[in-house]
Length: 114
Length: 117
Image (cartoon, rainbow over all chains, first blue to last red; front, side, top):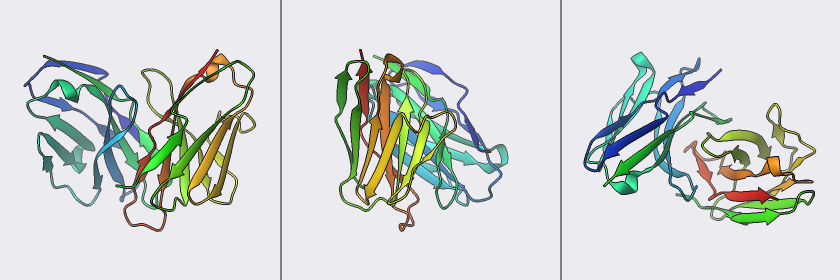
């Protein structure tokens, strides 16, 4: 069975601080996909990144970066120089190839104050 | 990315009435659509998976007679909450997936907030 754990329920930072959101996953599959989504107060899920299990390269996109480590089954997400607009709930998710379903973590609420 | 719409975005209804929520893939054909429910401050929980032209597959604990899902075309799936009660109040989100694509990505609708009085 697949499982995604986001141990941090809520994180509060002050603007311009860096923050890392943790994600640990469990799967028996050797091939799988990992995702991060942002859910602002409006509720709409915003896709941030997809990573397949064969690609362990870290990725940077502007102020966002992701660290994928298969050895520790982790896919952590870092926001550099956080901004108030980053305040949202962030979900990590896992899926199998051929795509049956997405397994979501419980989410981490990030509050960035001015 | 591909666009998925949901209608309505918000609905308030009286207890005992039925509510229909539409999910449309606007610029691609969705071989599979998923319906999720999200209670306040909780994660998304998959309710059911529907493939075009066939019956939906419901997750354990989801009443199929209460949550009717129809996926009649490759661009439209509907969720009908029958005889809604206050405990059905939730945020309902659909997603669409193109099984012929190599992207392996679900595209999410903006969600429908249901309030049952």
